[in-house]
Amino acid sequence: MFKKILQNLFEHLKKHISVLCNTEVKNIIPEDGGYKLELEKEEIHSKYLIVAPGRSGAEWFSQQCQKLNLKLINNQVDIGVRVELPAEVFEHITSVVYESKLIYRTKQYRDIVRTFCMNPNGYVVAENTVGIITVNGHSYTDSSLKSENTNFALLVSNKFTQPFTEPYQYGKRIASFSNMLGGGVLVQRFGDLIKGVRTNEHRLGQSFTKPTLHATPGDLSLVLPKRHLDNIIEMIYALDKIAPGTANYDTLLYGVEVKFYSSRLELTEELETKLPNMYAIGDGAGITRGLSQASASGVKAARSILSRCG
Image (tube, rainbow, N blue to C red; front, side, top):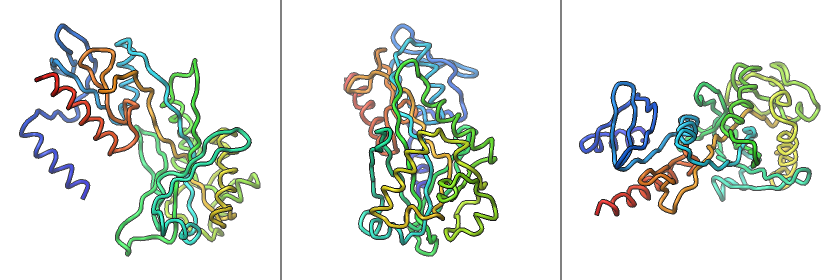
């Protein structure tokens, strides 16, 4: 359905605008009366410019901002694991609120840990973000495709101060440790993590919770920083009080899950940058965190431009 919606949007838009696919914008250059975009084989000139990189374009956007002397503001970095357990454990919650948002401040570090993207009777999946394999989850509306497990992310949020300027790189490099050790996503039983032993194929085979993703059994303590692990463990014990069984030995933890947020710009209420008639929108520009918000930011910028065109 989503693919069909995108196809219909493309068919409608191409009647009115030029769409260039697989075309790299090498540089954004301000010029009199607007902007010049340097492409691979040509240049495009425009009076108004909306920059809307996807998450995979976050690093490119950051580099362009540095060239344009646009000040960036650090966003938080969210790093954690995806938890998988029998659907019955959270059924009393997911039957009322399909995707609950549970937020906890840890006692040890006073950090925020939150649940995200809860998938009742869903599946854990791997995703590729610019060559880095991370973990995610989804579920189906078709009852015949439902699994016996529920999965959700546990994310630790940290905000850094100067001289830190690369939240995107920080997340990528932690995720790369998992790729280095396991060739992709690692999975570990919660009980093994607490005992300080690596989950191997034999131990995973003994688990009452059967994984929905074929991942490499391993040791997440070799991947995630201690502070993140301590926060995640404390959160799991806290969740166990409202959903008994969360802290079961056989609860599965997949790593690493990273939400790649970008350093964002200082913008006006209309999402305009310090450069006149240049707007920044979407997730890759650090402005939004999701499809609906990204779409709304595009509408906001477009309306601003229309008001100036009279």
